[in-house]
Length: 118
Image 1 (tube, one colour):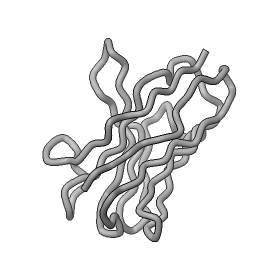
Image 2 (image 1 turned 30 degrees about the horizontal axis):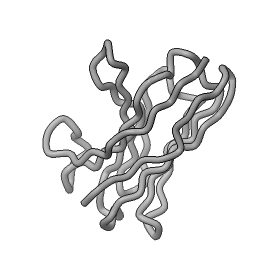
Image 3 (image 1 turned 90 degrees about the horizontal axis):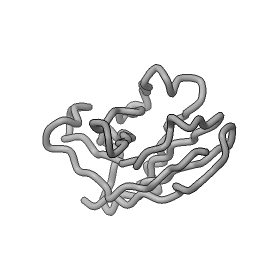
Image 4 (image 1 turned 180 degrees about the horizontal axis):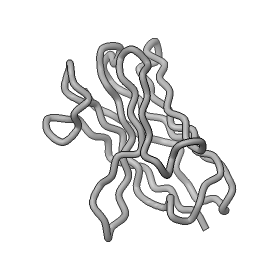
């Protein structure tokens, strides 16, 4: 499986972006997540969605970001609204090993898409 992210860019604070993550293989049984990394920090979880549609978000993303999935298109989305400068980072899509939502080991990652908020 290969993951390809798109949709990043530069926006002003308060703006919105929609990130997409396309998978070369089916994702219907896979827990999918969005993570981000600033060069000065460790990669951090932003949100993930399991195969049943259950979602979870980091506290700073709650109420502003929405993760969703379209299994027919093998695509996961991250709608980001009310963006803040502290959201600036490289955003990565990850696919957890089957049967888990554990991304720390064995996950497949995309190449990332840059989000810059000024």
